[in-house]
Image (cartoon, rainbow, N blue to C red; front, side):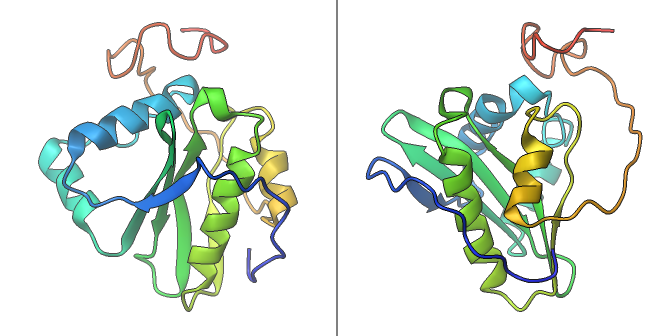
Length: 174
């Protein structure tokens, strides 16, 4: 994405709010990471040694936001500004109970507002076949344009005990 698109309609619910995450609470961060990411086999942050994770979360060029609902922490947004004039969505997602409620659109609209409030020329992200089946379409409707495809291979986090053994039942364990 090279310019800010118009925001798409999203619900405005009084029980949804966005909080800037201060990097010190690793327990809260890890719980949210698992809540949002287990069904998509997220492993990125769980593989980092604690000192590296603490340093990353404390980096002022990484802006982390939590979508908080009456049920607690239900969404995660990481905006990475470490490359000059760019912002990458490092992590983006909502907890399974919020899928299909408009919460993802609500969170993405916040991501667009925050990212494009900075002097950036490019806003981008990675997605994969383990993400929600409609993720790519969602990102394209938002205004992102696919530019590359790759094959990546990684160890199953269930087999490594990084996540629940029953996470992502839609993905066979190989």
